[in-house]
Length: 365
Image (cartoon, rainbow, N blue to C red):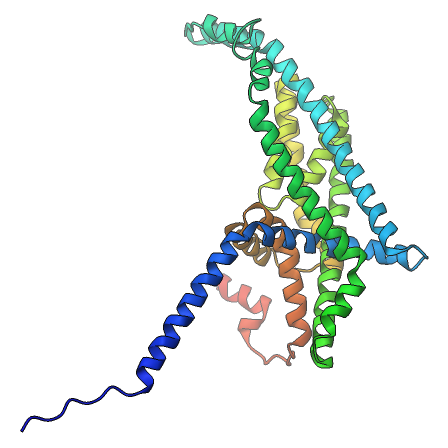
């Protein structure tokens, strides 16, 4: 007599159904998040900007300003500064591009004669010179841009729409900040309300500290490079110094290299030896900033380890691209401050591994 087949436990089909439903729900959530990723990025950028602007708005509100007009005033000030920077840089680039196009044939002829006289190398550069002459491809570049006005206009309209969306969200987050926090806290228990408000306060403090420290370092970079460029007689010293101050401080990782590249190229067009002095001056100032200025300023505003900052920038770039690189450092500082607030610190035991001098002596031995 054969043994009866064991019956499947009743919970197995139910577990399979629950698993499939859970997997389907996760896929649906991931799909929806992917579809609204642009909105999520806009909200994150708006939240970051609101944290940066709110301290100034609160300062004005304590002096009798209504939050709406105070927020609009800060917006106007920021947009005026950005507009002035873009106008100055646009004028510099237009001037240098025009100069390069006009003087390129002379540069090419000089290189041709130098190679022939020094190394006996004969180059045929007539075709290349013709590209920069009247009617050449490089000279017609401005007219060719007109043919792409449709695509340029479409991209510009998209950028304007996203910018206005960010500004609208930021305005409501700042102007109606207390009202929004009251609405959120009304759905939480008193303990959770205190936790949420503490996190919000830390985020505002750390983001404000980040902007403050970057602004101080940017101002120092602007003043020093303005003096250097003026002494070296680099064209347009004020806009170039402004470029260095902003790009080196507010664009993580690559900002330092982008900041130095433009002044070096413009100095190279002016005088090659000047470009070498500009490169040397920028490199020296960067070392002074890294080891002297930045530690003193950030220790008073936002103390975060450089390795942690670099890692969070890479993580932010992987998750959100350019937006992630801009938000990474203040977000990391906020998380670090929030965690340190609720982590209990203990007294350290004696160990050579905890002693800098002990570690150095072991290495020397």
